[in-house]
Image (cartoon, rainbow, N blue to C red; front, top):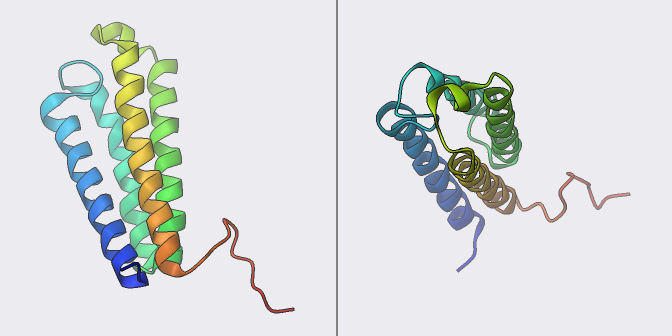
Length: 131
């Protein structure tokens, strides 16, 4: 049954799981090389998520925007890491880094879509049907 509550709970579960696995990747596994200082750049993504969640107060429409911003932050942090030359210093595979970051971006985007469904919005822009 597809209700707003079901979409909201699923969105929240995907968001929490994605953030948890990002923390694990930063701390234990390492996205850029085998852990260490370069991976700390990904804390910015989590900061966007946490700050946005506080501002949105877990409301579905606001959370949809927060998760879009979080996915965008994931892309920006990845681009910044490449521009800073971090993967070359650590000997990390560019394909692996792009793939892992694409996965996180898609998962945050999925969460945004689920929150938008929970909010009952059918268009990407909050357009009212009232004239």
